[in-house]
Amino acid sequence: MPPKAMSATITPRQLAVLNHIAAFQSSRCYSATIGELAAALNISRPTAFEHIAALREKNLIAQSSGKARCLQLTEQGRRFIAAARRRKPQACNAPPLTSDGDGGDWMLAGCVCAGYGIEAIEDPQPFSVGALFGRPEGVFVLKVSGSSMKDAGIFDGDYIVCRPSDTAENGQIVVALLDGQNATLKRFYKDARGVRLQPANDAFEPIIADDCSVRAVVVGVIRRMDVR
Image 1: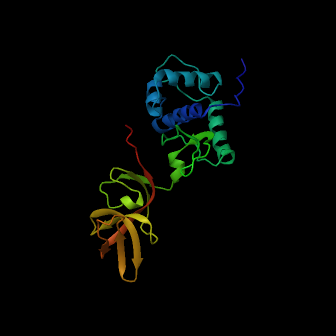
Image 2: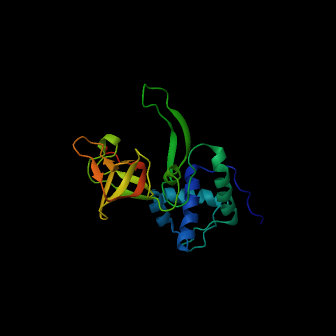
Image 3: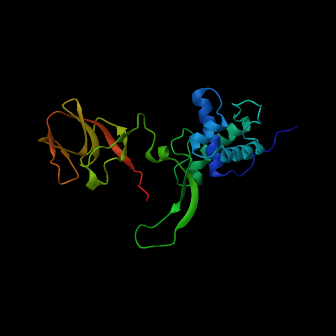
C-alpha cells in the first residue's frame, strides 16, 4: 500500500506533540509513552491520545506496534518537522516552536491593549519561551530572593532569565559576584571611580564595589501570578 500523503494542515498543539515525540527520542534514545507525553505537555492522557490518533492518520507518527513505547516519528514526520522549522520564520513574526519542552506547548493567542481598551486581536500562533529569549550558550534561570529590584519590575519569588557574560553596559541589570563569593542582583554602572551596583528600591543603598565580577546579564523575567 503506498504511504499516505502528508496533510497540509496540522494544529499548533499537534505540532507540539510531534516535536515532543522527536525531542524525547533524540535526548533519551528511546520512545516516549503516552503517559510521559501527556505529563510533558501538561494534558490528560485522553487528550494526548486524540492528538496521537490524528498524527497517525496523517502518517506523521508510526502506527502502534502493541508496545508501551511506540511513539515514533515516520520518515514523513521527520520531514514535516524539518520543513516546519524552515517555514516558521517566514510564516509569522512569533518565536518558532521548539522541540525541547521549553514552553513550546504554549500558545500566543494574539494581542491585547494595556492602555485604553481596543478590540483584542486574535491570531493564534505557537509560542516558545526559549526562542523568545534566544539560545546563546549557557542561558540559565535564577529564582529571585529579596526586593531590592522591585522598582525595576523584579519581585521576590520571580525568575530571571540570564545570559552568561563577564561584561555589562551601564544601566544593564546583572548578576554580580562580590568578594568572590556573594552574588547579588543589581543595575550595573562603571566609571573612572569604579563599579556601582544600584538597587531599584529606595530602602536599599548602592554598593560601591572594589572586588566585583559580572557573571550574567538579565534578559527576561518570568512571574507566576496568584489567581484568587
